Image 1 (cartoon, rainbow, N blue to C red):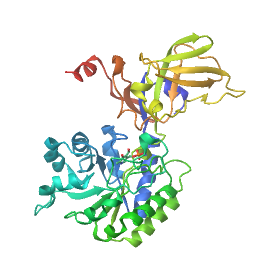
Image 2: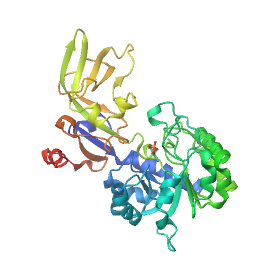
Image 3: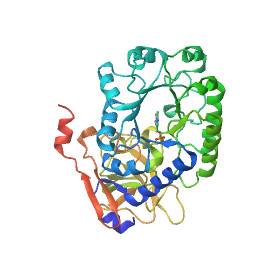
Image 4: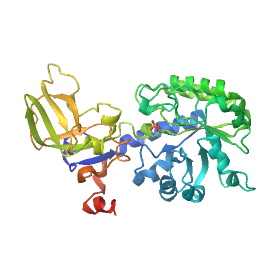
Length: 384
Ligand SMILES: Cc1ncc(COP(=O)(O)O)c(C=O)c1O
């Protein structure tokens, strides 16, 4: 897509480029086949169900964190989910069983709580438990599941309890985030070191998400060789990866427009028709600085015009520190936030009643196609 293509897209809008999306899926499929593993989409990162029929052609299914996600997978992808939640809502559990092929529990106590389902003669799902291998390359505490005192997964000091769990079939581990294959290699070493004695008796192992396989500098051959050697060691285990970000990495944008420019003692802020807190919360929570088409994150000789970017909500902190542009911004100008498919639409809110960006896709043959436009009824119905 180029700037003239973006000009055809209404603002604000999240737009998925189907060509780049298919390219990512192609690579994931190739990895699946070469490494003899299953890759499933983590809905928590991207749940745009309009493209589930496409995803189904390439990937082995999807993973859910709740009854609603499991139902969406069942209805729109036509397959049962791999489900994991830090705890299950008792009233939802029957329904989760109905729509899940694999269910992972977060603690030994939770596993035992649902034992009647697990030890029935014809179990309806394959039971697993999440373990915490004590290793994560993630520095940001908000995103580190192996941080001290983490509530996510059973730690190795409870290995004897783990060994006694009846009918246990799988282990689930998730401690990576936008990580590379060398991090996965270290994670696998930590899992073998801590939980290796469980592995020969199990049927599957899920190494979670956080594998950024579609990033241009990711060492795919190394990943494949790491996974192949793991499989040689444990031929009994079916290996699952459940990325979210990697599926849609760099496949779509958030199109926005400058509404006003305010100047406070020389600090200029371009106020946009989108909100960081409502539409791109990770830019404030992580925090990270998204790339913007034709803008620089640093000042240099070509990019001299500095602007903070302001969200349209009333939150004082709803802005990003300065970006630099080759010429002054003007009201009505489009700003294109890059790589805005993962952890955006799944996390958006209607705080302040701000308009939610419409959602659509782009293809070279058909141009822009709208999937969802939001209006007052979406705002109102959320509240009653
Ligand atoms: C249990 C689990 N699986 C998979 C994922 C997906 O991770 P990513 O989108 O970084 O690949 C997450 C993300 O938080 C997760 O918590």
